[in-house]
Length: 231
Image (cartoon, rainbow, N blue to C red):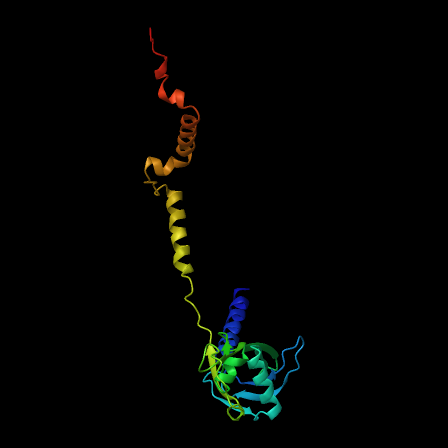
C-alpha cells in the first residue's frame, strides 16, 4: 500500500513540475467597441501572438484605422465616453478565455493611440487577465488631436507573472504545538502569569458592579453624612 501511495505522489510531482516548466504560447484576438450603446458591436482591431510565455516575446499585427473609425474615437472622446476592448485568448492547450477592459476615450485620443496591454499570468502560466492602459497620460486635458495622428495603434505589450507570497512555516508551528502538548502531558508546562492575568475575567464583573452601584446610590456612597444631630 505504501509503495502505491509513494508512486502516486511521485507521479503527481513530476506532472506538476512539468506544467510549471513548460513554456507555452498564446494568441490574443483584439476587438474594440467604438460606439457608446448598451450592447456594443465589437469590430476587429488586430491580434497579438505571444511566442513565449516565459520570456514574453510576441508579435503584434494591427491594421490601420479607417476614417470612420477615427471619427468614432473622436466622438467618444468629445462625449467623455469609454473605449472598450475585448481580448479573446487562445491558449496552447486549446482553452479560450475572453477578457474585457476599457479606458477613457479622451485619454486614448490625447495619447495619440499609444496604449499598453498587460497580460497577467498565474504561477503555472495561465493567462488570468488582459488589461488596457494609456501610455502617456492619466487625465483628459481637452487637447485637440488631429485625425492624422489617430491612424493606428502603437501598442506596448507586457507579459507579467503573478508574484507568489511567502508560504507559512507550518512545520515549525506544528513542532511547537507538539512540544507544548508533550510538556503538558509531563506536567512540565507551568503557568507563570500574574494573579490578575489569570483571573481578570472574574474580577472585572465585580468591579463594574461596584462602580455602577456607587453611581446609582450616591447617598450610600457618602456614608449618610447629613444625618448628624442639629439641635
